Image (cartoon, rainbow, N blue to C red; front, side, top):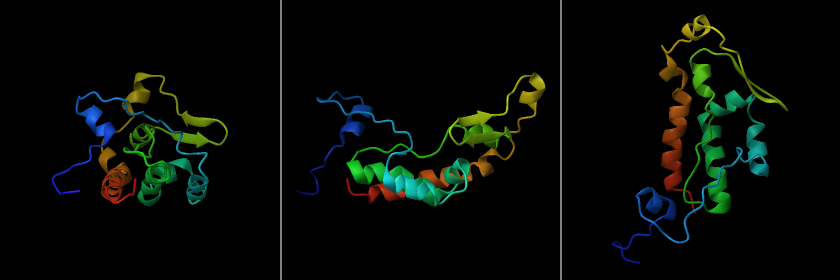
Length: 141
């Protein structure tokens, strides 16, 4: 293959606005909970939020299905509930129940949320994004 020949990844082709057949699939996974390698990785953290905030673990969790299934796109391992946590809302992930957020019932509850320092509190997630981008380029698919 010469240097000018470029293999186009189906997912990126569709994101650029072109139509291809067959279309790529979008696979949404529940954090790979069924993968044995995920279970080993998950056991290295004391809680789900700890797992999300440890870039080395979150990067690995993101790349595991890419390595196993040869997918051409990754779903970042994190959780949307890191945002309310970073704002100061109490967030827990209860075993067998799932996420539980402290209720916001009044305007005062909302006013107590604090956006100062959110960027710093979410820094591990940003580190995960950077780490995934770097590692993804070198991950066999």
